[in-house]
Length: 126
Image 1: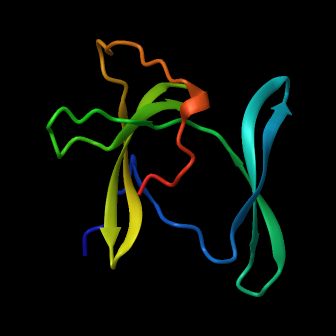
Image 2: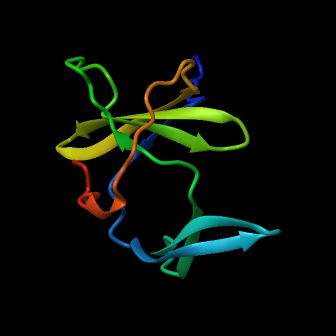
């Protein structure tokens, strides 16, 4: 049986019923600030815990320009090397999820995108 290669791919699903975003903020490690969020959860055995997540990138709504195969969201990954994250809204068994793909940053770029964070919609995008 061939092994499935999920290199530079991923998926995101709605949270489990045990999970809840409880706090967000900034964490400084060795003099470098980064954004973080704290998610309350519990193990299968019922032990309560808090998971700490660090921001690694951002997704912006993509103008598909009539190309329905284009990703719904794209953005940069903030890693040691410059990468691009693309995400597509999908449904499976009537449940929403996002399929993601990591690729090299596109050469030539394009026009810079200015985002007014005061007008960002906080609703889940699907």
